Amino acid sequence: MSPPDTNVEKQKRRHRPALIGIGAVLVFALLVVFALAVSTTDGDRPQTPQATPDATDTAPEG
Image 1 (cartoon, rainbow, N blue to C red):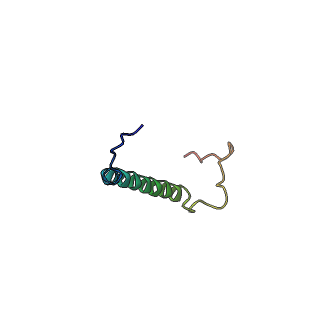
Image 2 (image 1 turned 60 degrees about the horizontal axis):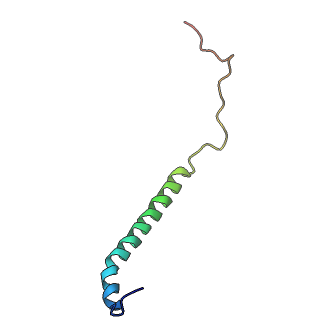
């Protein structure tokens, strides 16, 4: 229950900074997620897998 003398306009003004802050944090979080997604899928990976050395591939001694 709310008191009968609540001034809704005054409450809107009082909550505006908090709502702006929440919106700013959401925008920042979206930017961070987007940057993370771009950095992990940058496209600089080789198209073919690199060959792994076999047990028979040994360096010459000497």
